[in-house]
Image (cartoon, rainbow, N blue to C red; front, side, top):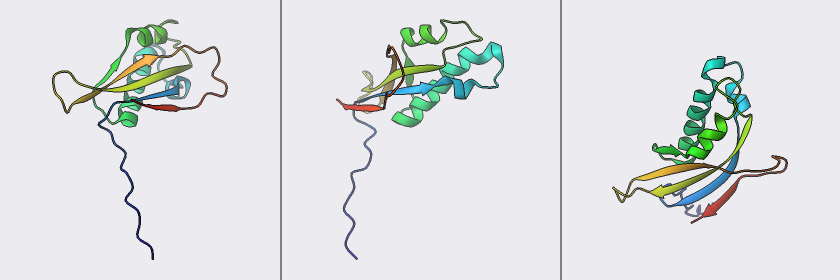
Length: 117
């Protein structure tokens, strides 16, 4: 049997940017009306934390404003987000993820893009 090649493990410490579409409608279906926009922010943070491997997730004011644009009861159904993992200024080893809003005209045919920094 041939030896398995050493596979490069998924490096979750270096800076990287991932642009993806997040479907809020799936996560908010059947939830209480007055808690939908705050839950949308929590669900985005939970998804980004799992995807990027950082516990410190920061949402930009522009993304927050877009989610809350239609009020607490009816947040937007889909959102295109850019997740950028950065090194913290205080600690050299610590990283955080900055989540930003990406404006698109249509969600048709969009895929996840990974950009190495």
